[in-house]
Image 1 (cartoon, rainbow, N blue to C red):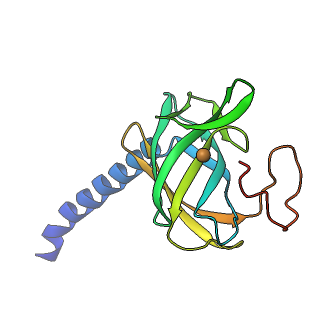
Image 2 (cartoon, rainbow, N blue to C red):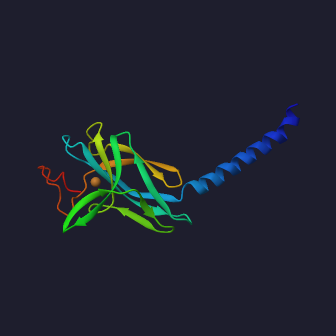
Image 3 (cartoon, protein in one colour):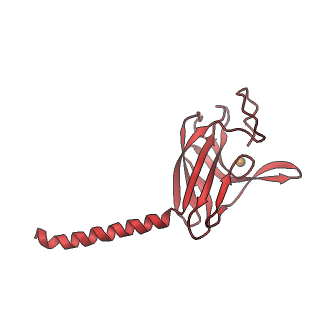
Length: 165
Ligand SMILES: [Cu+2]
């Protein structure tokens, strides 16, 4: 009986391995580099996350939503110039064309973490899940870091800079 069952078992395993291999090849056209969440003073209930998104796939993709257990609300944001004043706006998607990259950086695109459930400290890791237009998701563990504000000024630690992103 054991011998009779083996060919079926082998066939099953081979099929499973094939399915896993093709799924992982399809599932990860998106690579993320240099992801970081900005450390903010404990009184601040919002912060931002930056990263570089690379699309190694053959088709265009877009990040259409973001989730994090660290925040009550998460949004995709960009900065726009309104009569010479930079304002941030919610956007529906962050596009990453095939073979190209999208940079989320101070003064531009970013992920907004709103209603933080607890203060974030430098060195903490924040779980962030990106939702793609294909319905695939990518969950990242993103370190909390001190990030320079626009203009390159270093955060002196004396407050007053936490609005800048
Ligand atoms: Cu924002």
